Length: 337
Image (cartoon, rainbow, N blue to C red; front, side):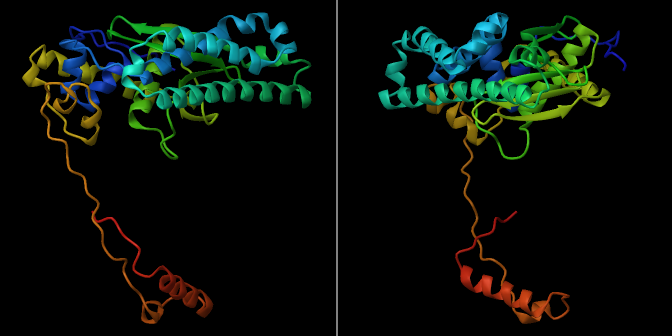
């Protein structure tokens, strides 16, 4: 395995980057300017605090609670999680009275219940897996089972001064084959059977930085969706590390070209503009025109028995297809390219 290296002739820009900053630049350079160069404050919502709260509870779980695992093993993990959640919510959410001016009581209650559920889902999943390891006689106790899968690090800072980029990995875990997996916990919903580009970009940058700092390339990086107990993994190899390096260098090079001139940070009009704090519709100064997206409806292509005259389908299959079409009527739509 070759460790990523810096070319002698290349220099980073005037700003230290992070996966979040890089993803913001890819999403919209103008938003990047407002957020990280002009440093215009964003509108604060409960969503910004929910992620911080969840990560704080998980960090406490990994760093403190499991150090005294014997007492946790004899007790009720759900009760411990409930106690930690209520304490954190009162401190990090309820204490910010101005949030009630932005969200209704129903919205606050719904968010609290949702956050509570995803944390309970996580600790319940961990407890179930540990019990299974003992039940299947893989380990003699849950304590031994936990030691085999516990994160080596929680909230691990990884950085590179040469590339002027820094990140925080939620959990660095042991693989069963002795390798390493980096995990990032998400409170968001899943986006179908694939990994969103911004999540992928974040993960490979973590892999790149971890390899630089630790001198050891992880086997996998992954996103764990807490509310679903579902994880998407990316296999790490030299190609992935090279892709991350080029991604970092690309954004640095763009910043060196644009420096701190607002007009050089182009707008990228998109549907997400309607939720951007910097857009004029939300009291900001960005006047990007939000695209008016409308689906184009059309009728589904009709077919009859002549369509299947050269087909190898059986008569029963052909009739079944025709019957299905008849039952669907004209309610079907297709998306025009």
